[in-house]
Length: 153
Image 1 (cartoon, rainbow, N blue to C red):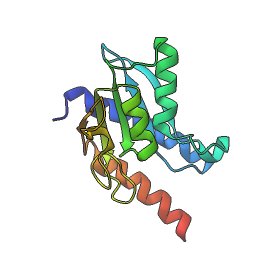
Image 2 (image 1 turned 180 degrees about the horizontal axis):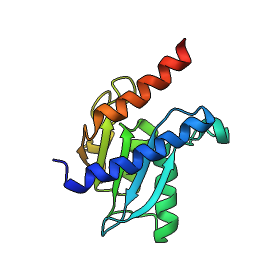
Image 3 (image 1 turned 135 degrees about the vertical axis):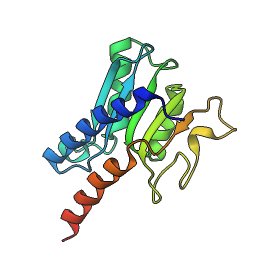
Image 4 (image 1 turned 90 degrees about the horizontal axis):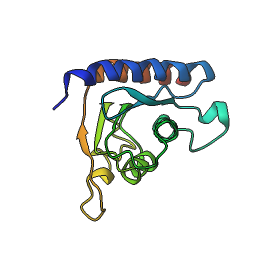
């Protein structure tokens, strides 16, 4: 169930997603909220900008949060992202011990938090993540649809 603060946090993730458009990266944005709800990390896709396959919004936001907090365990944080994380990003979320993930649009082709796979809630792992999906989904989806329509024409 979304919390009232989730909608505002998704707005910040959408701002990050729009930053990716400057470098023709897929517009995905993420923020990490700290223990008291403050933003401790943010990121947007930068694979094209950085020439880095791991330059996904979630990875960049998790790295920024770890640096800001001085620790890799983000066990009191929430990851908010405009698109359902892929396998790599879902794995990073689990490894960082993030307890809660808020996502905007579901990714039926490559999503790893319930769509294609459910890495974050796999009972074989030592940590599972609560998933809250569909927060501001229309806005998140529209940004992606517009981007891909522009790249396919």
